[in-house]
Length: 142
Image (cartoon, rainbow, N blue to C red; front, side, top):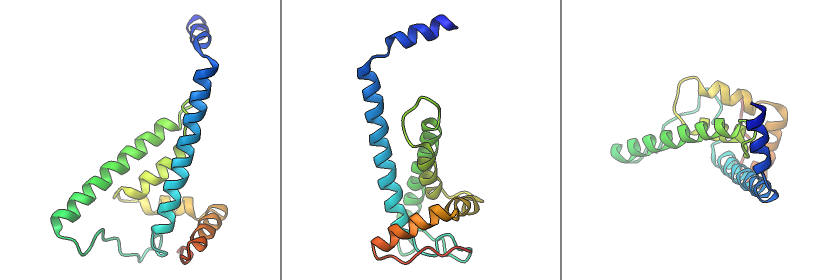
């Protein structure tokens, strides 16, 4: 086992470390931008219990169901990608990617989990500051 680790360690170069660090920075930036866009675009009552959760309500049923399926597939992909990015040694922001994927999927019980993450004082304050910057009302929590 030690020989395998030693042989892997000897193949790592400064170039590969630099590439891994660059990949980390790019994925961090993409995660922050994606989370920022979602947090600004969601309605202020998104995390409230009385929020209407109809996706594309004025669209024809074929378009709406196609979009719902595509949104859920993308959300599941982001959750799985976030899990991989959360592993040690893999560059990227796993928790942010999981949160973004969780917001996109339609599964029972996801709203309380999202709300628990967002209700943390530092997180809610940061989100509401971002929303204020783009002239959006603050999030309303139950």
